[in-house]
Amino acid sequence: PKLTKTPPKPRKPFQRIDFLVRDWQNFDDEDDMEAMEKEMDEYLHSVIAERKAKDLHDTRAQITGCFEKLGCFMFTHPGFSVTKKKYSGDVQVIEPTFLSLLDRYCQRVFNEGDNLDPKIINGRELTAVELGAYIKAYALLFESGAHFPTAATMLDATSKANNSNATNIAINKYKEEMDKLAGVLCTSYVSPEEFEKDHKALATRSLEMFDEMANFGNRDDISEAREMVLRMLKENYEIYNTLNQGRNPLNGFEIYILPMTIAVISFLLRWIADHTCTSWSQTCKAGSDALSEVYTVGFLFMLIISATRAKQISDTVKRIRKAFVAVSGSGSEKDKNAGKGSKND
Image (tube, rainbow, N blue to C red; front, side, top):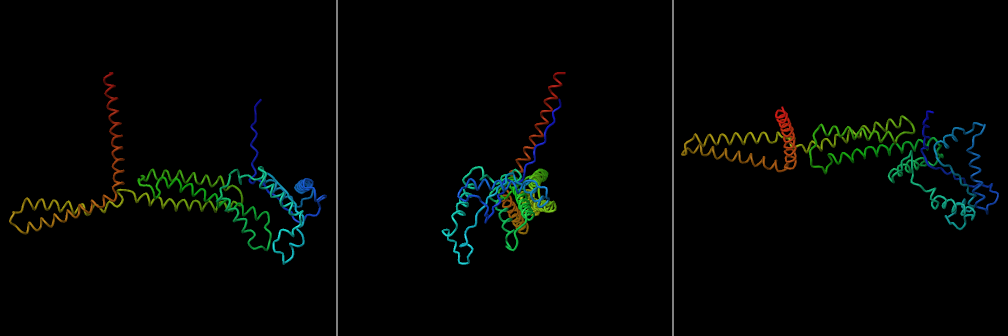
C-alpha cells in the first residue's frame, strides 16, 4: 500500500499566556490552595470551550490558535486598605489570602522549570535585544492609560516589534559579513566582479532571513518593513563599495601621470642638453641643473605617494603574478601533454 505523508502540524507562534484575574470572590475554600488552583483550571476550560453562542467566538479562536499553553490565575481582593488614597504601599495591610496567592503565582512562574523557558516566537529563541523591542512595544500600548488595549491592538504591536527585529537581524547579518569582505579593518582590494557577486549573495540571504521572521501580522506593515530592508541594504552597499574603491591601488592613478610625465620629459631634456651643449655654456648648465631639480622633485613626489599605497600595490602585484603563473603554468601543461601525445604516436 502507498503511504501518504502526513503534513506537519503548524506550530503556534507564541508559547504561553496567563490570564490574571483580581477580586475573585467565588472560591469554595480560600484556605485550600490546591482546591483553588483546580477551580481556576476548571473556570479557564469553561470559558475557552466551544459554545453554541457566538459571543467572543473569534477572540477565543485567536487565543487558542496563537498560544501553545493557556493559564489562568485568580486573586482575591487585596483588602480595602490598599484602595485608600493614603495607602503607602505597606505590605502588612494587604489581605493574607491575596499575598498567599501572589506568592504561589510567583513560584509557578520562577521556580517551576516548565514555566520559565527562553522566549520563543515562531520557533525562534529571542535575544535580549529582541525581547527589549517587544517590551517597548507593549509598554507603548498603555502609554495613554485611558483605554485598555484590545487583543487586536496587542497582536498588531507584536507583529510590528517582530518586523523591527527581523529588519535589524537581516541588516546586521549583511553588515557582519560585509565587514569581513570590505569593512574599515580590511586592507585588501576586492575586484568589482567579486564584490558585486558577494554583495548579491549576502543581500539575498538577508532578505530570506527577514522573510522567515516577518511572517505574521498585517501584510502592508510587512511589505513596508521589507522595503526598508532593501533601502538599508542599498545604503550599506554604497558605503562598503566606497571603502573598497578607496583601497584600489589604481584608483587616483592620474595623480601619478602628471608628475611622472614631467619627470621623464625633464630627464630626457637634461640628457639631451648634457650631450649636445658645450661644457662652457652657462645657459646649458643652468638649464641642466633646473631640469635635474624638476625630475628629482617629481620622482620624490611619486615615491611618497607610492609609500602610502605600498600595501595595495604589493597585493595587486602579487595577484597579477599569480594570474601570470597560473596562465603560463596551464600553457606549459598543455605543451607537456601535447609532447607526451606526440611521443606516444
